[in-house]
Length: 382
Length: 134
Image (cartoon, rainbow over all chains, first blue to last red; front, side):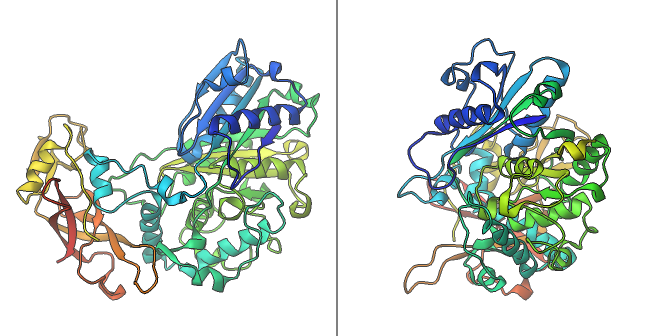
């Protein structure tokens, strides 16, 4: 059960370190659940591009006698993975109240996000050779993936633009979103190239802040402050072909195995899913995950997203908070946090009428690491 | 864009020795399977006794992307074509597609023939493989 959600101010929030954001997020999540810090007996931590978070967070929060403590790293799939491990811990009796937290602070005044995200280039060895070759950071790698999909299936930039426009329309309804001005397909097409075939509006934001969730037992959650969100099913998939010959590159990701596995564990079918929150480092990641999860046939993601199915007026509630493209970039905590809000029915103007079963994805590396969660409200769990 | 500076380490020393001599070195196992240069075991049969052998230098285009630099007043943004090439021996390689002029879209399609060449950022740094249109 997810019984608590804590979100610090997100976006261009300067001052706190990543560790301070993380500690704030845990305190907020504990309070949200109606618990006290002393109730927490498990802590899982995850850091972003700037690092700065470790199991030292235990000391920062004054948590004593923990029964579970670890730092996890599976890139963008980590948030989902933390909830999975926390769920197993509480189901096994290893711990009873587990806080899972991610925070990052890449934005600094007077410093471009590119300078932060491009700085992982190493001057030596294989990694240095990749950078020296000009393949630096995530943008080129995902652009290469998207181009391959376009060549194979005829997917177009305009079709990707439909995802960006729809998510911005959702962000307009989300007070926590960083970008709330509506955009059009023409805006998407006119936005500058980052790495062709990606325009600026195909790429996620960069944000400072922290988000935490509290995972606990069903018995415990029933007596707490918030409507409990059931964790019905989960799965991971790590294909393991990064920088290797990979016939699936850009065409199929780990979502194709993790999605069906998580739904099977939950005893649910895709048609039971009411709300979908997908990891969206790029528009293309959303398109590929929709195909891999089976919302449309392989290769038909382009026509599917352009069919009017997306956005607040569409019939598929997808990335209902605006996602990482328009709301906030907290890696896997972005789709997870919105999923919890929707499952609780507390999303206000952007609340999906049907919200019994929520499907959540996390994606890390270059489509190399995938986590899926199937969450449910009380009604959906029945 | 030209290539950037890179230094060798223990894992890449032999590869860069080959690059300095104009040879793109791959790993080959006793059964004859080729693996990418960074492999420490055969990607096909998991053998760990690998030898460095020169690739033919031929490749075909798998995918490409065009990285745009920031534009500044009165200056065209600099564009760099980045490519995945499937080497004729099987492994894939990621590097820029070096060209004086960015190729027209019609020039870029899966299966387009490529050739490996080498460029250096400067005399102090290692030779870096790049693709050129064959």
